[in-house]
Image (cartoon, rainbow, N blue to C red; front, side):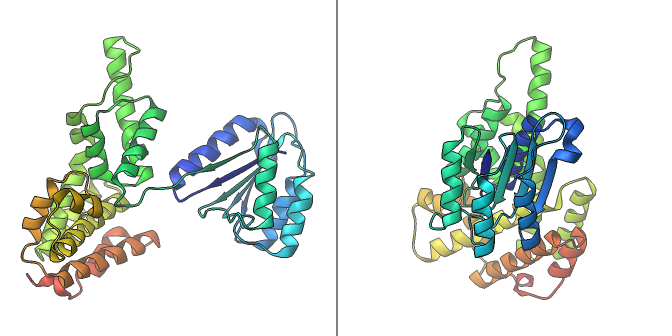
Length: 342
């Protein structure tokens, strides 16, 4: 009766863990019979999941019932909780129940206690959490990069890791994608040098492969700060046409805008400690504070807040399915205080 409790807002890492369980448990030939994915937002599907998990697999390999947005550890009906208590006792040894939710399990709930007790009693069961570091948690972002480096068998020095953090932030999916590119290059270098030694990724290589697009995005952010909206939109269009992911672009823009806003607020409060400002603002390199101060020295707090609001609206619009360039145009071409040079 293996149960896997996987939670946290790092969807990239959570999905990777789930994929590894599926590949380990299920025979691909029998996957259509032995794999079910359930939407935990639908009460009827939750009851169906508890019925299916009591079934043994067909053919070879095991069976998996995956419940996305699982309600079992974050609040469910009394009837569903009672059904879970019954089902746990009837799960076959080669059938796995995967419960996935972005929220932390509520340990006060009876269902959570039952699930965690079952996990403790079964060596094949496990609970794993994957939490994204906050935008200002630089050490957490460094650890996120280090964990991915370890998984991909790559090496970087501290300065190069900070460059990744500064360029990407806490976007787990993007970090994984960029490091995979570097892993492929590292593998090619290993073949050329005919060595099995782990290659250390240089700062120059990261600048070449990772930071180029971020640099372009920072140029766009500067154009927006100056009120040069048409120039910024042309730069955005060019970047999108060249294959830059829209969400990666907006992540860089909001990160830059957030840094401006934090530095402005902290400076206005009289904080002169550059390292402390960098820590609170989520900026890996404290030397950037001097550059940011120069960029925003003529800007008002209202101007920076307005720009941040627009970028957040663009992000929400893109995530809702709107064409990226339309999202940028609809929000950036409206009149606002970013037109002024406060």
